Image (cartoon, rainbow, N blue to C red):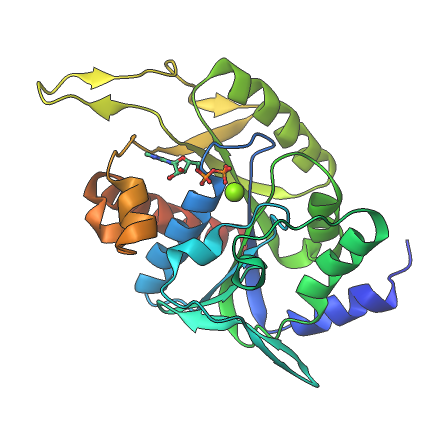
Length: 259
Ligand SMILES: Nc1ncnc2c1ncn2[C@@H]1O[C@H](COP(=O)(O)OP(=O)(O)O)[C@@H](O)[C@H]1O
Ligand SMILES: [Mg+2]
């Protein structure tokens, strides 16, 4: 398949990005955006240069995690991502705020392509892409255009509903020849005051379609307050300490894969 002019532009704009981590699931509401942001922050705190792209253009939320309220700026060369919290960030949510984003058809395709071809990411070790639920244009755009430097982290909950959708997503990633770094099981358990571990969504799995679960994230009742109101994810210490360990494993796995 010949490569289009737009695809060449995208390749050029991310030429100084070493690796792209697509955080996907197929299922909505399982914690993709939360995990994307938390992974980005944990990896950058370990000394890496990290960017975060919110590709859920109908329901962007990444803007809520940052103190910055202004939109991004542009010049003839392209759009400058927002720099906040040690991360370069791009989300349509910085522009749309509380307004709906009714985009469809060709226009949607164009916006998606522009989000890649126009944004000046500069030098990055990792670009983390927060994917929308489902399997559609976004996934194919990313897997087709960035295949040489792309890996996927798959997010699920232990529920059978989530696992059945995620199973199909992994099969598709295999078909698209996207390397799956691992599965993160979110909302896995919470620990009661009495010390007992409760698993409200089921026991979960250790692997799915040959891909291993690299970490299980607890339900942390402090998470939303920490992310959206105080904007200090460290305040959700139960979640934060778990994702920090997973972030180290994700980076090690990627480095081994590409070495
Ligand atoms: N481990 C967790 N503990 C508590 N709340 C969580 C956890 N993970 C996600 N959430 C909450 O679940 C909701 C959905 O998460 P989100 O990241 O937006 O999912 P998705 O991007 O998959 O739609 C958010 O309100 C988020 O704060
Ligand atoms: Mg999301």
